[in-house]
Image (cartoon, rainbow, N blue to C red; front, side):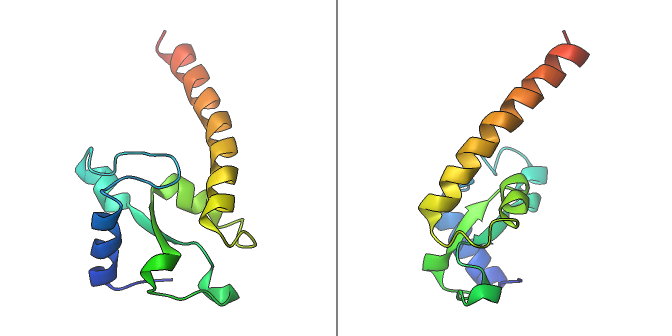
Length: 103
């Protein structure tokens, strides 16, 4: 769901430019800033509020894309826990690829 630029900026500033799920610095480059997204903790399709700041968390594209499969998780704590698990796997796969391609 699309939120207004005003609310997007409020969320970005409130969360200091960091993905609330993996901690990625979304101000590290223009590319990461442009790809920053806002996650609806309680999905709008499931009754969550579209522009209620308490329902919104700043997220990197990877985390927000992964979380789209977990709309049944309606609290930040539950969504953060699943991303902590997934990010461990993603980090391991990333490190293996780096070692393989750029030893």
